[in-house]
Length: 606
Image (cartoon, rainbow, N blue to C red; front, side, top):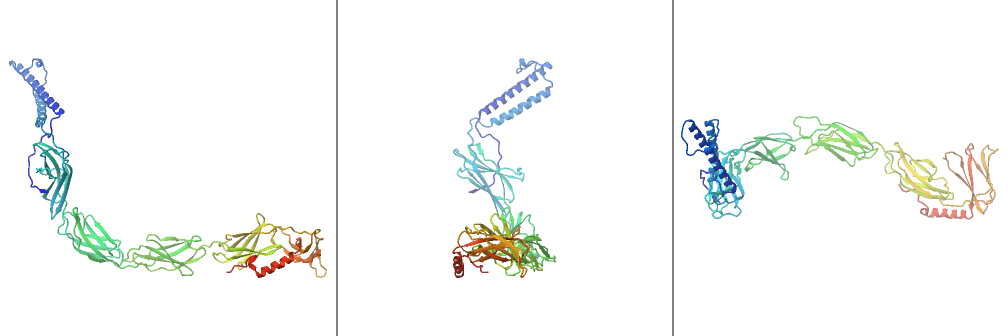
């Protein structure tokens, strides 16, 4: 790299190329224009001479003696102006010899860089040689000062580089924050030159020195006000840069632009110390940071939220509302609100957080019919404030969940009879009123029975043979009927033994005035071990139960049944007990006593 002194040159305009065909045509046209205008002027003067009695002019044209003109002075001036313009254009073309050498291509990839060190600027120009450079090629670097609008403010300076291998030049001792236009030309021979496009560059400002006297003017719970003095060496500052950190991990950078000598750092954490530094920055770079100082914010613990209240909005959610704590001088920023809540067991406390601009929130995913206790707090970045009063809210109740582990066991095979057992619902949502059982033949009429809330078993009425029975058991609380647990039971298919001539008579005994049913029948078609008589009140809506009388005498032909409610009509069914069934029932009864799990399970453990 070479540094060049500044050389002032007088630059003469010239054309750096051989003549083209259009240049020959232009030269010919300009010459013809000059000749034509000269001949016309000669004719004008000849005619004027004739008017004044003069003789012939040797240069006059006989063909043009009758040329008309309006004013001698105006016409002469017009022709002379045309001749002057044509002459100037001809001179411009004639300044280059028609066989001059071709100008080389301009340098390529011209790069201009500028630096400022110690209040002195320099410019470095770099370029690549032109494609197919001629022999004995040299370079010229053109350098001219300009203003911010690109207008030239001084004469152009030219650096000549005779070594064609040298493709870099530096211009030194320049003023910071100055603007220049630069171009590079490749020169072949005396006048042929190809120049690059001009590039504008601004020398950078100086790098500022260290900021002085950084200090904390004041602080609040969430702000620190800084002041400082400008650096002794600064040029035109672009900005001040503030760096502060609570710890080495959480570093924060702020740009103060336009630059001023005081700044309020906001949104800080209360009761916290920060390390703070300030630097100045120009367009050339950032100066050295100031000596670190420590600034601290004031302590702040928020007060309790006010007017805390709430309501249940459904079975699993409540809404709570509050007002912000009363403001006090020196208060910091509240970052949000915290709602703590727990149920009556007070064993597990949950949290619900919202922003500082929220004063009503819904807390969901709660248990129906459950009492919860709520308390509100305001919090900051660093601490949680004092809590307000505790309020109790109860979610709306829901119907109970289904009873659990609903099971069936057979307690009698002839006539069929079953028992149900179950466990209470997992969720009762308050006290139960009862259990409701809806049961009956599948796709047939149903019966509804109400079972005490303290019972966990139920025995059925005698069931129809060869039929599927459906049992739907629900728990009931103050809200209503919950979902049902469902099970089914299929009774076996049997061929009944029906004695003929069954007759029923209603009789009133003279001895005590009671009423009985006297049931009679004839001998059955097959041998039996006895008879079963089922009877119940006749009802349009069946709500009672069958009652059973068993006679283990195959010769019996009648039975007397005392009536507790004699005013009702009754239905009576007589069946024969198949031969050998009594012994099977005895064996089954023994098996039930010895192995109760074979035919069913007792009530499940609580």
